[in-house]
Image (cartoon, rainbow, N blue to C red; front, side, top):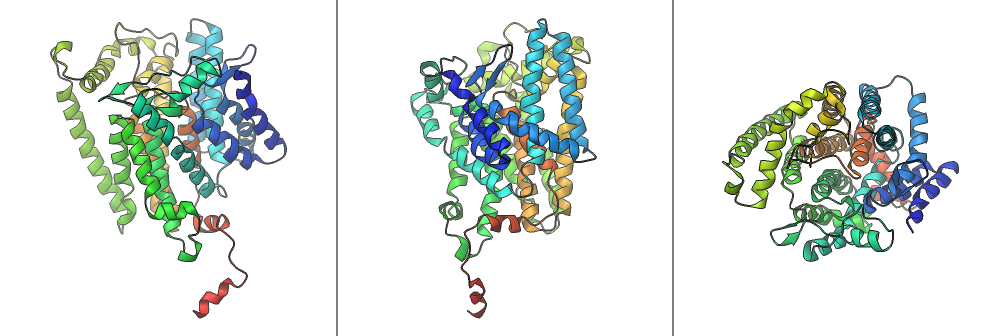
Length: 455
């Protein structure tokens, strides 16, 4: 039955051939990305397992890559992402113990990172901004009932369906329990990864709320517009975030909410500086608390599961330092790096990148993040249209959720696609009026719309 999972790819390819790339992106790729686990895949001969979302992405990404190549002078992040993929490929092919594993991982990285980046870079702007944000928010909201089942009964329905229907064990039916309840993971297969996606959705939804609030009363006929004005989507997304019981995404989402306050300042530069100072002070305070919280004499001094998880993450950074140094510029490879006793799970993407892809991959990864933030901050300062500015701030907040939280979790499952889709999207933003694009998606006005002038 898992052969059915290539259907998104077939439908996507059909739509792309028909010239309906935007339809394939909105109605095939995004639902497959957010509603189907990465473990739902099919393996073609001599190929790695390809997930349903990756199958759907490949035709769209090919078009986006063609547009990117023809678009002229690349941006700095374009170059950095290309170099990161090249460095990743070199590490995998040269350092993996089994070369076939390295080739398969290089292909997976090319699809999940580079094609997702190219899609965000060239498919969404300018006409699909509102439609894409709206589709992402709605799809994430649809995960609620499945998450409630997990939270209440401690079972992942995707894992059950995977075993009984698609004959795969890549998605686990059991979920981690905390405080007597299951941690909501849904299609992301990990509570912390789900928390990152929920936090990013909260940031994007803030722009959606702004757009619907900016509409005239006559244009607020859609159900989603009425729900937005009641803050229901935002409240539901925050509830989902709480149900993951993940501290990393919660802390990062708090930082994102603070970033979303920048437009309240009359001077955007001053507001950005004040928010940056507050975040820096909060980061330093959190670091001191983390050191105190994890300063235990031995494992018998750990009082609960949350403290044990924090101590584990501190030990990762301390004990793997020598292994990282031995890996050199290209690292050990994703599957071939040494695993220290009791520290097999690398719950820190920055550390995992250093182990797998060495100092070169780590430097490029950091530069991608730094340049993404720099460009978004510049856009916040320069964009004049309120809708453009609000979207740049929302994207900045979404990026903060991602780059902060991956200090406590690996970048796995669908997260590379989600993250690099948004990174590419952030590079394509230009000074333009979003309200004009939004009005194209609103119900058509009556023939004599000008009659309001006389009221």
